[in-house]
Length: 149
Image 1 (cartoon, rainbow, N blue to C red):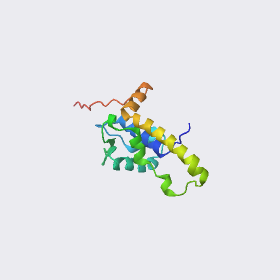
Image 2: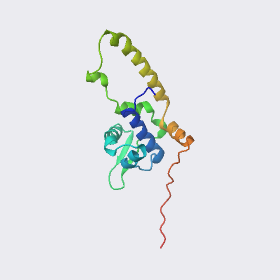
Image 3: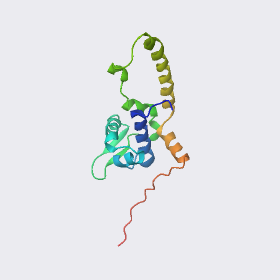
Image 4: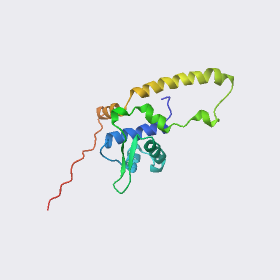
């Protein structure tokens, strides 16, 4: 696999988890997302905040709080998720430089990046949820609570 498992991939995991387990009406806790993804809650908290600030997630506070999608699944493309959490490495100034990088590597990397971007634009959360179901994953059944006395 050529792509690194970094902030972008974790952000996509978070969003697909919320789409799969909560959607627009239900809520899913950050702790549950972290547990299902095998990640530390404190590690995903900055991503949850960035996704909430961007409007991709809605955050509900309180003891029964959690996260739900900010828009319908079909309206959230994977490239938007990646852009919401991406850090601009070029702005940091810590990257490579020189003639070989500037004239050969950077243009090639930009071309590859543009290709990946186009593929991410073509995929939305609705498609990812379909893929999860096709892979045999089961959505939780939200049954109404009934009380008998």
